[in-house]
Amino acid sequence: MSQRSPETLPYGLGAAILTVLAFVLVEMLIGGVLADLQDTLALSDVQLGELARVLATGVVVSTLLVWRGLTHAQLLHDAPSPPLRTLVFTAAPLLALLPLLWSVNGWMDWLLQALLPLSAWEAEWFAHAVDGTFAATLSACVLAPVLEEMLFRGLLLRGLLLRYPPATAIVHSAALFGLAHFNVYQFFVGFSTGLVLGLAYQRTRSLWPCVLLHAAFNGGVLWMASSDGQGLSEVIGHPLGLPLSAALFVWGLRRLLRLPSKP
Image (cartoon, rainbow, N blue to C red; front, top):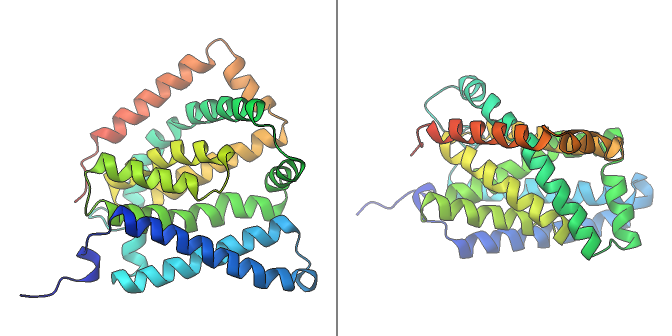
């Protein structure tokens, strides 16, 4: 009997959880090393944390690529249609989902902070993470979308889809994505966006639509933070804001669900 390649081996929830735990451990180890060099590298605490996360993601993704027998090209796009064609056909439906995602997550963030007020350290960390500087924008709109999509959709969800029904695999991967943010405030954002990102990957088997949606979502969050929430208030405070956002979400979701599921 021929031995199956690593890519065809089932990758269950237990292995996915272990992968996330390994990611956390690697991030902590790298963060410890960078902390010793913080003054030399002239890094703030937020920049140090982001750099540790980026490097840890790169280490884990590279290791899993070798183990799973995948190339970077397969990871980023493993569908019959060309990447640009896939992106063109999915861009409008995916972007149509954003207004409702921003609104729901904005209300959820407000509710959580009312129930569980941020500590001084948490408030400072979140303020620096969305302060609009070049480093924060690069991290939120480029590095995080590419690297996190490679890990959570390109590897973890890809593996979960080999063992579980699509809905189960998507929910599992979204929960892990939320938990990997390490705080309750970002868990619900990660989980809700993870569901949509997981559906986009399951339908296209391409990370490029996921990267687009991830980057656009984070970019909108940065813009709203820079306007002290006024951008979000203008959207959800308008009488037609919520109904229009919901209508766009339903249209985009139906378009995504009409896409043929890729094996």
